[in-house]
Image 1 (tube, one colour):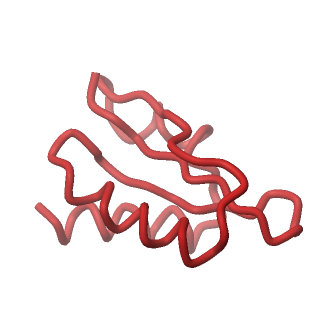
Image 2: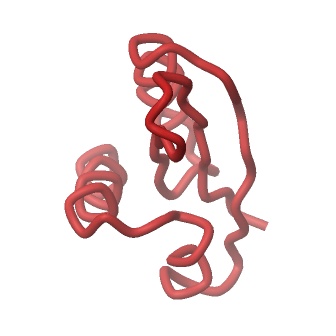
Length: 79
């Protein structure tokens, strides 16, 4: 289960896709939530790694949308 969650995260990052746009394509029964904003890269990745341990989380991504060093953590959560 953990490998699948990590693989989902890696695939989304590698494809350069936003979880907000890709979430509905992953599977029905999931929605996206922002779990943190204005985070450092290290803090965002630490929170992401903790989030994917949750069985109700299908994937997570840290994004620096403005290239300003402030990251947003978005997770795909089971409805």
